[in-house]
Length: 408
Image 1: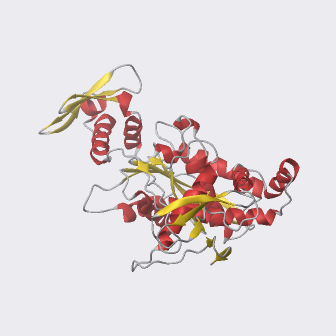
Image 2: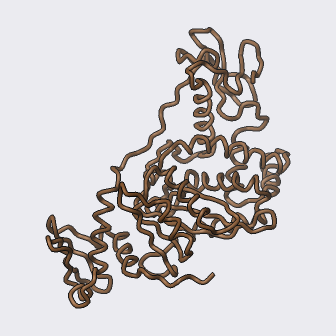
Image 3: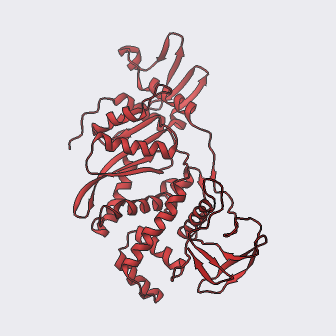
């Protein structure tokens, strides 16, 4: 599809100035600002007077129009007013509860003898011994082997090559379908945990769509990314590129970020204009500005999303397309976890997008997959211990040290 002609070049250039505000905009007095020229080493003076905004640039002086320098200052002030205070989202300290009476009055009680050493606890109230399910209860293979398989898969290695790697270097024989089951299982364990976290994203979001091969047919994958932290906020798979499909993406983005952005940057697809207006318009706050790009050159572009799509295409090429409609969303959720929480980003000085968005889970190097799964299992177990009515509930898997049984 050919891109439509861009009708907002001045707004785009203003947004480009805002993206480099630390170097391009200087506060001179409470009602005047200096804006650096993009074409030379000099500054324009922007003033806010009772009669309105004024600038000493040629566009304002001779053409009597609201120039990009005035727009940049207005956008910048709006972002400073709406930008929340930076805060780190820290993971609460893990609390061990008795799996039978829900008491926190527990002490460590040695280790369970098994292939993998597991910490054992004893409850002082009900006098029973138990182990906490860290996500790998009942699994025959070492958690390090499982997480190694997940990491290799989302780094772009095919299932059968992972099978060959495990056999060659670790002496473990396992089928490719077993690895596929691990991926689907642990993506859900992690997802239920990270979906509860709110990223501290900026006021500029980028959105774009790409064609995706699903079981021999083509579908559309929509992605929404934060400009500053590169955090992948939301994704959506659809059959078409209709207004409702774009609205579903924006709706998910609002729910996850718990806010409206000041700007949405998209390509020239007409669907975005109506979707942005319908999903972000509100009389209670300033509406979200939609910046539609006709190409990827210039001061403002959508290269952030394009780089992500390039990575997804490489992954999809190895897989020769996603298997079916049921597993496609799960695999893409796994890639979202890998992109946000596992993979360090060169443009963020070696941090992950989650860390740049203020989500600190203590995944400082080492086996990030293992730590995420353990935190996810602990979070899910804590949620399962108490029902809505406050009554103690039995978790999904309990190992009773007194009877030696796994209760479900």
